Image (tube, rainbow, N blue to C red):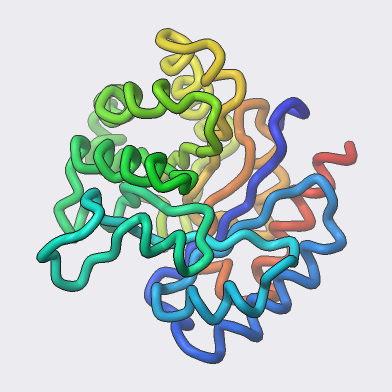
Length: 258
């Protein structure tokens, strides 16, 4: 971690805990977060839990994020949700271009850029996801894939360089598999992302937080988060159980004290 960038830990609950049970988990995470000064914590529950959690967590240490957003402000888009709607529920963050959205729901690089633009316009902070599949990694295409994905969204990010945002590096082969990139692999990808951004905007490269998102656990969090260009984590399955998420939060906070 770089002390000039405040660490960020985000929990992506995916399609879990969309009802009353979400309040108990969020309250537990909030209790932990109150003890961890200097750490930003965002939870991203399903849409159905957003309004209830915004009311429950009002004034607390957690920030609320959504898992997706449509690029348009309104219209005949059944089942979708706009950035303005997310703001109305109490969101301040939104995940854009998660690998599962790209893989299963057709999110293209250009559409990810449009979604990021929609988020900025509504004063939402986008958490833009990039990363390679296992096949791409084995073919030695990791950096080329990151370059292609960044190329599409970089003009939008640079145009809003002083607004809150994050980039999440997701090695797709590690999501939900129990595999995780080693610290050296994670640092290589994160350093590449930062250097590539610096080629267009040194200001943005210096301040943007780049998160690691690929099977983060309490056991590997300290090693991964200790990398110079890793500014936090986008946590999936481990974020829906307090006993798994808390060690990750505490590992990140411990690094801010060291």
